[in-house]
Amino acid sequence: MDDSGPFATSPALPNATRPLLGQTILVVEDSRYVCDAMRLMCMHSGARIRRADCLKSARRHLQIYRPSVIVVDMGLPDGSGDELIAELDQAAPRISVILGMSGDDGTEAAAMKAGADGFLAKPLTSLAYFQKSILELLPEDRRPGGLHAVRDEVIHPDPMAYQDDMAHIADVLTGPTDNRTLDYVAQFLRAVARDAEDMVLAEAAQQLAASQSRGAPVTAQTARVAGLVQNRLKHREAI
Image (cartoon, rainbow, N blue to C red; front, side, top):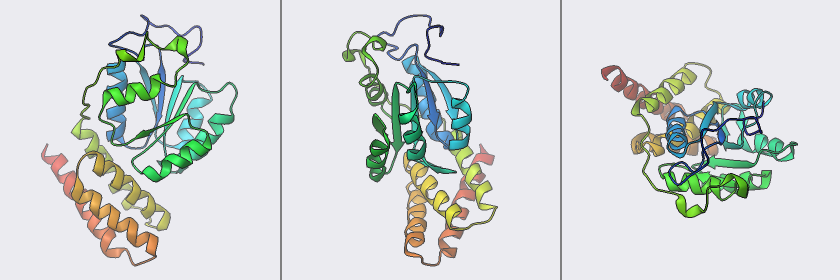
């Protein structure tokens, strides 16, 4: 099914308050906190949102639906987002807008080289930034009458979504903690903690990543990260 095809229904044309009306955005992102920010941005923009939390789930989704816009996080649990971006860039028919997304500036070049049309830098808090990044890339017949229609608003995700991310990482850490797993834990926590302005956890994740890259022992850093995650889950229980 093509979500952006001629039979897709839309209650109205895009306008100043809902400039992405009629668009379906597939967000390939494993963080619940980031996804909640994207959900709110899509809601305020008039777009429909679908979500996949890994490459496998995204590929399965794309066998059934073709969104008009896809946003691919560059660090996913089963691989790098540039793998999917490269596949989508070569697909026919091609999705209208393919965006990479990350809080790591170093991944933008990889996303663009793989074939992305643009890049969203985390943390995502500005509604205007989100809307303009997509509108500037949409075919002209899918835009409202002029990009000046974009309005700004600061988006605040649900704090409970951050707690869901902590529960996810706690589950990951109960399994085998090989190098690949710890790399994933470090990059995931570094990004989502920074988005949530949890700088203590972000710094601990950064230290874990640095030790991993040097090949140094990581037992102490892993234990600290695990302890901080559990501390935040206790806060969830209190809520």
